[in-house]
Structures are given as C-alpha cells and as structure tokens.
Image 1 (tube, rainbow, N blue to C red):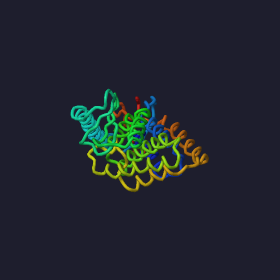
Image 2: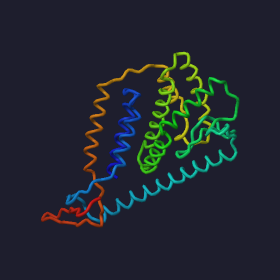
Image 3: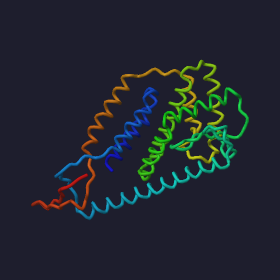
Length: 288
C-alpha cells in the first residue's frame, strides 16, 4: 500500500505543475508513475518496525484491506457496465459497412469503447465531410495510442484509493492528457484554419458530453474550465521547458529507486519484541 500512497502523492504533484510541462511528455509521466505503482515488490528480510502492539497493526491492515476490496468491487461493477454498454451498442447501433464504426441514437458524443476489438461510436446524425474526417481521425488516434487500456488501469487505481481525497483528480487529469495528446497528434500538420474548425468540433461535443451517460473515463472533458484549457492548447504552440522537464524526470527516477525498497508486511510472519524500557517493535521474518 505504501507504493500506492507514493503514486498518489506524485500524481497530486503533477496536477499542480502540469501546466508548466510540455504536452509531449505529460502522458509518459503519468504512465511512468502508474508503472512504479504496479511493479512487483522485492523481498526484504529482517526489518524492524516500531509499533504499539500487533493487534493495532492488524486492525489497521484489516481496515485498509476492506477499503481496497470495496474499491475493487466498484471497479468490477464499472467495467461490467462498460462491457454491457458495448454489447448494447453493437445490438442496436447501425454499423458502417464492415468497419468498427457504429452510429447510435443513445450516444451524445463520439467515443471509443472497449480494449479488445474497440469500437468507435458516433451519434446518429448527418455529418459534414470535414467534420466526419476529424472525428474519425481523433477516435482512431485513441485506438492507436491504446488510451482505453491505460484509462482502465487508471480507473482501477482510482477505485483502489477511493478513500483518499482528490483521487478523482488523478483520473480526470490523465483523461485530459489523453485527449490533449490525441488533439496534438491529430492537429500536428494542420494550418491555423484547420485547427479552428477542429476546435469548434471539440467545443460542440465537449458541451454535449455533460449530458451524456457514458463514464468520464471514456469520453471528452465536460467542464468548461477543462474544455477551455484543451482548446487553448490546440490553438497555441507550446515551447518545451527542458529545465522543468529534467527536474521532474530526475524526481521521478529518484522516487522510483526509493520505491524499490518499499515493502508490504506479511503480518502473520511478524514477531513482537519488547526491550528493557517496555517499547514494542516487531521483526519481519518474511516479506513479499
């Protein structure tokens, strides 16, 4: 659990400094921290940890375990609904030729659903040729970037730490960065007029997304503040702040090394010790 807390702190730091970092690397920062959180823990032997009593430690461990299990159950419920919604769209939606594109009246904004064999779902309406091209390019870029898989991983992490404050910001921030990275790749070779047309589409569907019933983890940003930030980044060319970039990379590497000595206590292998002054501690004889 210590590594989950470490990741939580790093994600909050990124939340406050992300506007000063180049958009080209922000998604990688989030994925690197997520990797640190989920990498296997090394074995460490014979470490002394001060405690008041074994019962107190066991109670804390039990409480955290229950909270994590509740979060895991909620994640499974969300994932089940997403799978169910994908099946629903394939049943009632109109498939475009033999592609993975579906038109559905129940959807208010374009979105991509699924990790294995993802489908692109569009509102059932008439589209201008340029608008249809931009929308498809945007959603296909999400598929090529594997954004849905990473969003599910962040959703899992968010559910596991649901009892911590501001944890929803982690998922929102990463969703924002996926959208901004996608916009950047789509508009990379656009002129200013094409960027403006693309931005109009983002505004149109971004406002509609607030009334949509799809989870925020798989759709566009809904709040006006986040939408405004997204449009600004589309129309403005950002210069890479390499000094800040190297500072953040160095910080993440240091914390990655620190995280390699994090440990998870297996309490049934702990031995309580009491010294001459009556202070308690326990020796970990086995860790994983």
